[in-house]
Length: 197
Image (tube, rainbow, N blue to C red; front, side):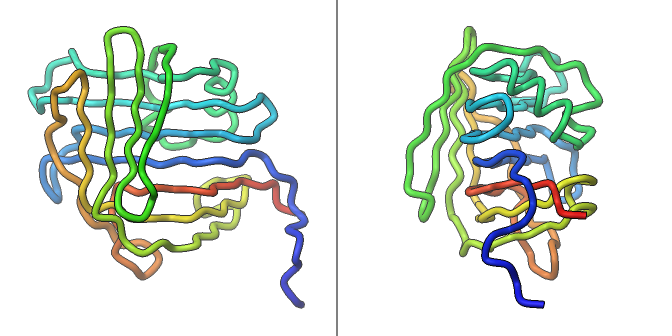
């Protein structure tokens, strides 16, 4: 059967969901995790949501950024209820934090995101970007209910600062669908759809 020109599924949301994962060694403990959504279409409107957990200085103290930064609280609640399944984000009780978002870069060499909130200025840069992959994940692979499509770009150098203080750790490779990709990626043109039964 030929591939349809128009995907028959119903679009759930579309935008971006770039992420970083910093650890203290290839088999080491997590130090910083960020999952940043820039939504251009959803049932609850557009906006940004960044899930952030960090042990910024790798000292084990509970004094570092931890929360759901957003400029659309309804979007954040909807993502938590309908989209986000990773227990990193769902197991803890992360506070909602009002924030402003901006970005710069060309997605071919580097991309930078800025999150500004009361008490926090978070800057994240993805660089040493690899060739992009067009990634398709049918329901059951990433999401248990939805098909996923995105432009996935590995970043082999990632830096995050909070109020000028650099986060410890680095990103590492991971095996993924027969390729070695980075644990920190730009996920652009990401769209989730309800598959046709």
